[in-house]
Every structure is written in C-alpha cells, then in structure tokens.
Length: 112
Image (cartoon, rainbow, N blue to C red):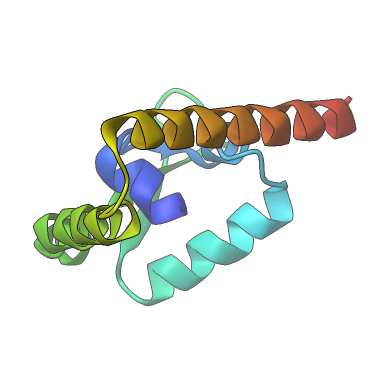
C-alpha cells in the first residue's frame, strides 16, 4: 500500500505524511520503506525545506511495472464483479466505502 500510494497518488511525500495518509504507525512505515528501498522500488532523500524529514520517491524500477500493476487490478476487479448487475456493483462499492470509513473512524479514535 505504501508503493501504490506513492506510485499512483503522491510521489514525493514525506515519510511522516505517508504514515498519516495510510493510518499506519511510524515504525511500520519505516520498516516497509526500508524494505522497499533495499529492493530498489523507492528512494528516500532529505527534504530541502526541513533536513530532519525524508521525502520518498518511486524509482525507475517501480515506474517500469506501473502499467502492468494497473492491468492486474483492472482484471481482478472484472473477475470479482463479473456476475454482478449494475445495481449490485453500486451497492458493493457503497458498502466498501462505508467499511473504509469505519476503519478510518476506528483508527482516528485510537490515535487520540
């Protein structure tokens, strides 16, 4: 999920911002980014405005499989809803959004 957030939404986020967006703890983010960095998928650089912070960027290696990544998820989505009516797809998406909102609310309550 770290790579997908960077690759498709917000390349160049600070490590702290990435932690907040994904509702993870700092230690998990640091470990995940260290693994992604060692595999060559991301690189961390100092923030020019605040040298205490690190910005995270995807590498060329990540960009090379971006289109394939999209196709895998597109194909998976087709399989998941292949026998659904349009109304069922709409209900399903509504339920997924509500579940995601519930997770966000739960995590926000624990962060306080």
